[in-house]
Amino acid sequence: MKIEVVKATQQQKSVLCNLMELYQYDLSKIEAKDVDAYGLFGYRYLDYYWTEPQRHPFLIKVDEKLAGFVLVNQHTCLHRDNNARSIAEFFILRRYRSQGIGEQVATQIFDQFPGSWEVRQTAFNLDAQVFWSKVINQYTNGAFDEVFLNDDRWHGPIKTFNNSEKLT
View (cartoon, one colour):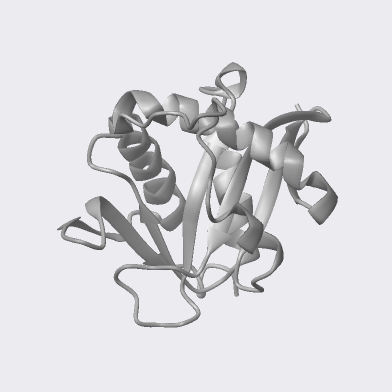
């Protein structure tokens, strides 16, 4: 199985937008979100991934087929470090889940950006909490911190780590 994480180009924005709808649909069960008058969930930050240099959109491919996406940015709740990274959104199509693909993709993304990381999960997304606990524990050999925020910034667990030394 060939797993690729490729930077999404401006021309691929509509592809990412379509995948985002599937992602939002999955989350609607947890977050009680509704579609708009056009039958879409939408994602108000998507355009910024091609206009702001601190945002990075990636498409995930498995054996040349689209399998998901990852959005990385520098919008963090806990880090005061302007260079800290965050997984803003992470989506693997259901067909490709539970095969180790998400773990490989997360590792590739983390390895691309050495430094401080913050990975948030909403309080009600228990599957994401289990996934990220496993992935980050393996990636850092247990060298990460976790706090639970419940304020206007975030509601749920946030895992933090620094991979600078791991990658040198």
